[in-house]
Image (tube, rainbow, N blue to C red; front, top):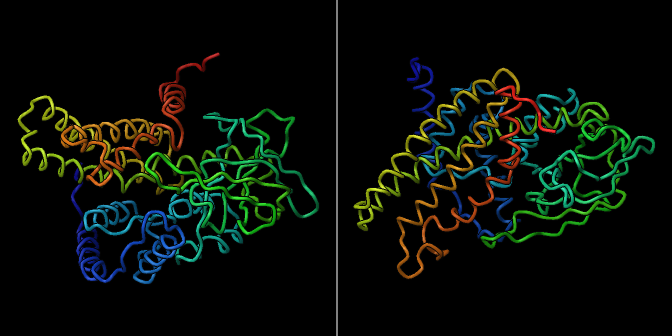
Length: 378
């Protein structure tokens, strides 16, 4: 299989690389990690810059080869990550594009692409754990509205979001996977309380969200009532199958930096560490090929179960990458735990990857049942 660029792709790559070289030096200084209003403005500004240059819709609807080139080149150039826009660009937006009505697509997609609105994700709940379908947040019809009460947790960027992709239970008597509905909830609606959560690394991009009889228009329902679990599987397919593409490129870059640092500080003399870095290099090369497959598959609609294979392997590879970083840093002076040292914050953040976007245990079950065809456990 020839994976080299076509003439058209090579022209796109060269044009993008030239544009990045011109625009990146003119960007403002990135706000501090705790300044989420500032980071929202920064991330929206970058998205608007991409939109004005013709790159705004690359995260959905673009040719898969174009998307891969865009993600490769922006990561290599050190361009800003999607940041506060990641739910809208990588989860909610593709879901609305795939499942929403024409009116919903016209209302919600252009503001995301233009860098005007931020979305958050209201899926996980305190009492449901990794069993997402065990959610208890209730919604009942009252005329043209749903009235919603309940609580969500790990709601990314809730404090600066305009919209929330929200899962609610609309039929408590139905089997748990069949009584769920997917709603787009305006975050300025009365009855919403946001309580930020601080992570192990000291950041606060997550929040608890409490809903006290929040009114959400029925027109904001994506898909049919009680068909939300199917729509959710679309969202999770994008989240697991294509949302981590840029991070694979970043991990490959970090791996090269680790090898260079190990040569400079003498850790390269350890054959066990060299073998570990070599195996990680092979792992991330394979993950990049799987990423290409998933993105190509998504071009025809929604990514398949290959996203779970990717997410499972990537989560563990990322954790091992930053464990290797700790080995390279060594224990002298507590460098492996010094937040001012390179890679330490990434190491702490990597601990969440076997939980976020579906735990590894859930991914094992999906791969076993849907890829290998093994019977479900009882």
